Length: 574
Image (tube, rainbow, N blue to C red; front, side, top):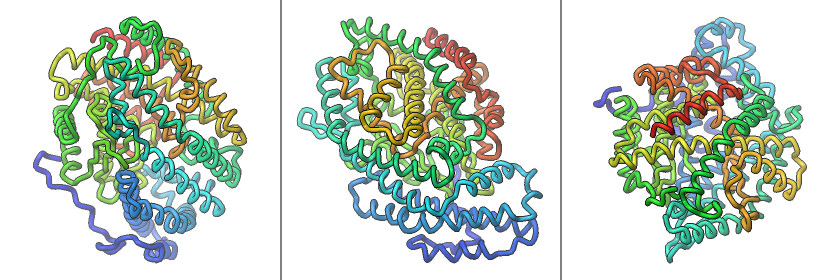
């Protein structure tokens, strides 16, 4: 893709009418029935059938995508919420049984074996079989109810604001003040944020209990003992098991938590405080003013495009196209859902980035992260089937977390002073040390939640604290703040919206460190390994994709020790 490339247009349709848009299930139904009734009399007719089904799925996926994007950008817009809800309640449930029938039709085709040797088809067939095994008609209304309930989390969180000096701020905006060098101001804002979260703790607790109950029913209906086992199968986790996750937890506790303790002991000493409190964790330990990476959303966009362009012109062009197409919504505002995401838009192939930027360095790394996801979408958008464009999450997060690290060489665009640039790089590497234990915390907590679906809220709190203490540093003083700590898990939207999507961050973080190490040794070769892996989309297994990047899919204690030593060395060089 050259600098002068025109904006992408969606591919010409061959199965659906060019102007077709989705408003009701009755509009869609004939296309599913056509695919269901069409004879598969040769390899050629099977291949055309697959292309037509892929086109239909891409149109549906993109329609849902825009409904979700609009709803999260404007949670207070009733029309957008209704549009999304209409899809969840009236369209998606009707699609599910037809998708199952189409899967079975494909698996029964005598010509499918002739495609097995083509790239991606072994993975596609493997995924189809597990989808058929998991499908239960009685789970359709349960999934509809689950989607309705999870939508409430975004609405509750999006409405959270606090008053600071007469200004109404979102929690993301208020969180920036936790970097203030004025300790009393940090403490004041910390308490305001915590109090606002606690105000909805019972509502969020009740919502979560309902979700656990619904998800457990889904698992039982599918013949599985718990929702954890259901999701491992649903996510297609063929390359590792829950037991491997437990080994990962153990390795993080033994290899990373001691480094986290060292960092916090050093922070406490440099801040010269008698007790390190939660509101002391984001401020610069030298009591310097917080790093400011950009002025506003426009400045963040321009600098991010230039950062990517310096890495490789193609990477910069990806973000530039998204800007020109209006596929970036970056700044925090009231009524906007929390968090950030890159939403793939399956038909046109140009994704949408959503985030809640204020002006912090963390916001800058967020767009590096989501930009890595976006690059992944661009690299796979021309693969022939929609199924091939949806990589495993362990690979998707490799794309984003690697970009956070390999982009560091170009961060001078955001930080023109050498001292600030060094601070930014140090903060990024220290963040890795903080991220891995938090990933282990959330993941281990989820295993227990769904292995014990009948637990009470009180038992949930007790177990949360047990897990939290296993992976948290022992330096931070939580005395008097126990209630805040009890409900810290409620701020993690993954628990509500995408259960069991979290261990991937840990696995991908390890892969990203290894890929960055390759990049440090040879930039051209490292970047080529990055793109080689991402181009594979969902055409290969996770270990094969990692191998294409010249790294290992490995989360053993030995490997984590090796990678953490590398991070320590790089911290020492700054």
